[in-house]
Amino acid sequence: MNNKPTFIAGPCVIESSELLCSVAEELVRLNEKYNINIIFKASFDKANRTSINSFRGPGLEKGLSMLYDIKQKYGLKLLTDIHESYQAEPVGEVVDVIQIPAFLCRQTDLLVAAAKTGKIVNIKKAQFLSGRDMKYPVQKCLESGAKEIWLTERGNCFGYNNLVVDFRNIADMKEIVPNVIMDCTHSVQRPSAGDGKTIGDRKFVPSMALAAKAFGATGYFFEVHPTPDQGLSDAANMLELEKLEELIRDILK
Image 1 (cartoon, rainbow, N blue to C red):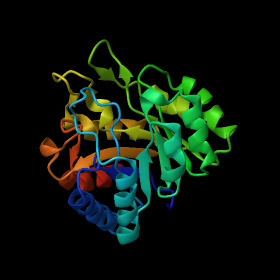
Image 2 (cartoon, rainbow, N blue to C red):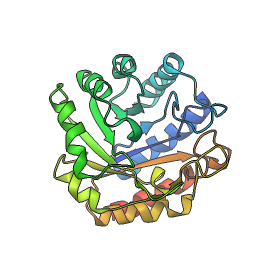
Image 3 (cartoon, helix red, strand yellow):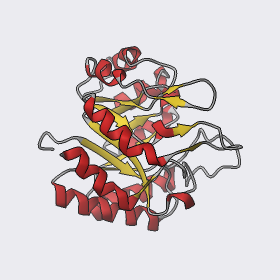
């Protein structure tokens, strides 16, 4: 990757093949223009939605098939998250990076299953943990055979229905693993503050990215959507796809 940052981008959840293709086409264009290697992300199942009535995605089998199609058609590396241990093996056959959700980052069986796939494991720091606490999830993965582990900062609970980012966590986690990602979109959430759903404010996404850069982040995670306000999950904090290029350009300066 020519010592350039790790970039991860894509829609929050798999909504349709058309959405995946429109995002993938833009990522391919940006990769070629800036000589980077953006990893395409999308979830096949949002298992932790606030409401039981919220859209969750196409599920494991169909979702992996759709992600595989993106990989074959566009040549992009893939990342997706797992919520249960049995998902690790089939997911590992398709994606390049398996992500552990923040709420589940201490679940030993989930970490062990992800590590045993041999894929990169990206562990998101829980909203209730410090950066230094993440040495224990990393240790679980290392002792289970993981060859490469990333950590991701996504904010900490700040009272009820709010998050705040302590950017010192980036430096602390870099003492544990060399690649520390800033989740620039989930960190602007206001969890469960929207009458049965999580809301947020995407206008702060660029500032989150540039502040993380100042603290030494080695990668950046963005959920993006051509029309985020119409998105079926995390609509309020997804970045407009058309604004991704400018932000990447600013980070690369």
